[in-house]
Image (cartoon, rainbow, N blue to C red; front, top):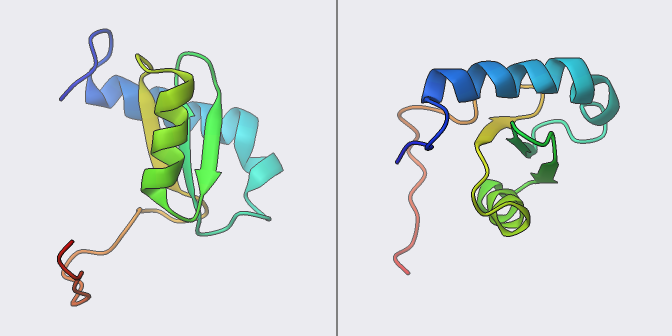
Length: 89
């Protein structure tokens, strides 16, 4: 589901710009390979090794926020074709 004010390209562009301009130098060294979720309207962010936990906290702070997520220090947030399986809940 998309955001009311932004399309996915706008969210990605703004989120990456906020990361590069405001966060990278401050958070990357100590949080390499963790996830960051950035509210592109406020600049608030959450970091966690669990992307769902970071996302949940970000949404609790700003329920209507427009969020950009990425793995810190990586070009992508995951792998395609992984053979890791997850147990049924």
